[in-house]
Image 1 (cartoon, rainbow, N blue to C red):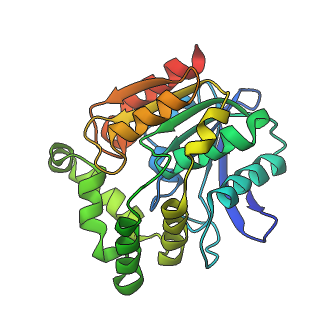
Image 2: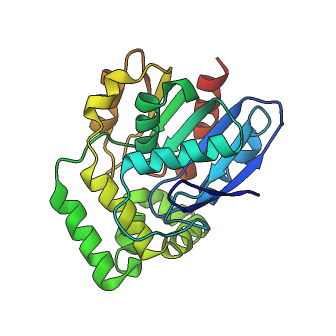
Length: 260
């Protein structure tokens, strides 16, 4: 699968599958995960779409440049991938940080986006100290210091107890993330304010929220829905990583929106 170099020299790892002549669906991961977080949805989605999955800079098999990564930089990485693959337009499904990048794309590259799915995400975090504390812990002690509390934010207690194998896989994925990549992306989230962008998004938009999501609570997703003209909202019985906790419902919800 292709490795694509951006204008600042960062290598973005990309995987493409599905029908060559199908409409394109690009998937974007949460902070601290890689493109494999979508594996439960791939069989359902690649029957209808040419799927593009990628590792955001700082994650997976992509480069890990030092320094803060802005949302604009992360959005331009996506455009570099599309340009390299000669893809004019995509549907987008981004969860958590992937939804944040999707907001930037919807507002700043509207000609490249057909439909948007913004999942378990936020447009702004008022409490910067929360992110400062988390990033300081990672700088000082590494990702192992926050992995347990992270799993508690990502998944409900019932799911963690019922699916230890899924939790073990997500822990492994999280701990494999390079600290510099996590910190660079975390600084981008801390400094993000997408509230002024929402009114500029014209693509048909579905917002997906987790009823029990403490990381990007329902109210923040409702705010996004209210400020994007014509956007709709689906609320799933899940915590933060809704596509892992409710894989079939999540896949069906996205397909219903994209295919109608």
